[in-house]
Image 1 (cartoon, rainbow, N blue to C red):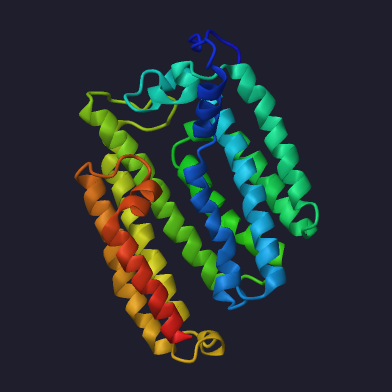
Image 2: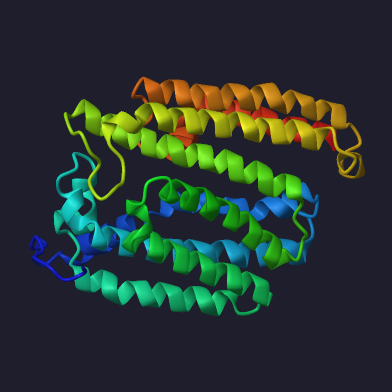
Length: 308
């Protein structure tokens, strides 16, 4: 429920500016990096230099980012009571009382309306993907996050939906290989997220995850599911490299084979560090802050360029 007792927000002459900064933090702009997946269809189709494709991709990116922030606000409002018992999440603006709930109630529809206006010039298929994303994230915040395994399937699906939205915005057809690779890869990262959350709770002496459908005894199963899914994504990549469609896009497709061991290393390392308790709940944030991952990702980008 959205209603409920709140921790009073700080007041005073300068309350406006801190409240704006708290709102900005609640929007989680760092999470907008996930929406860069919208550019994947244009990059893989080698159409990223087409001005019209770039403009449509940018509009799609901004629209998705605004809707994503609306979803984060809704999630934090609904979870504020549970977040107050969490060692890290208790510092979130709604949980800490820095932001009143009424601010979120006003900002959420404003973000959705602005996103809809920006997305209006794009194809209807993109508007459908954007609406589906909004409905799915709302359902996730209200109910689906409490259902074991369904929650991680939804998280993985939301990543893949970003790629689908990018293809819809630019009218670039998506291959079976890309969708299959995305499904397995992001399911694995979703499972890393749940595994890390549960491992951290277990280290604090908790047997169950609040508002989730997991217990500490599920750690082994989650790791098995996640590692299997990670390796399946690499298998899909290898099969794609060996397919006839690669020769149509790349003049030196043999270079792409180097991507497989690099991706195997990156995903295996994420799970190894998660088992050691070194991945603090959000694997994407970890990957974006990990220098080794960024270095190898840059090298993988060079391999794609050399292959083309």
